[in-house]
Image (cartoon, rainbow, N blue to C red; front, side, top):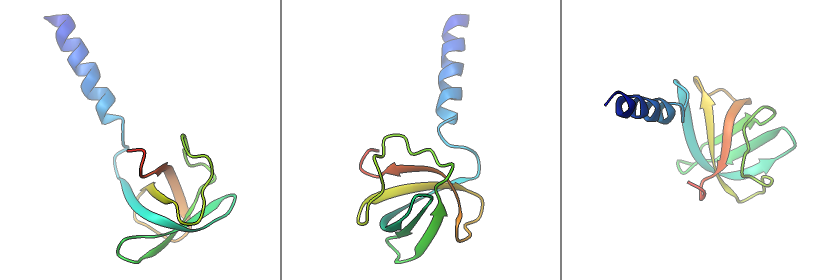
Length: 92
């Protein structure tokens, strides 16, 4: 019984680590991308820009105009803020 509770607790903790507290996700289409920045257009037609210098880009083999991506960031959005993670929205 203790072993079962321990495994259940570990599973809940691992699921909670998927996204940091205060992290927001936004989907959009890449409008422009450079070595350290990405600019996306959201479904509501907002244009947002993010620094990608320290972003986790696991599974992405470059950012190209027209790609649909999901950007995760922490805090209130400000232009040029640092992205935490960038994923291909089709991978989810």
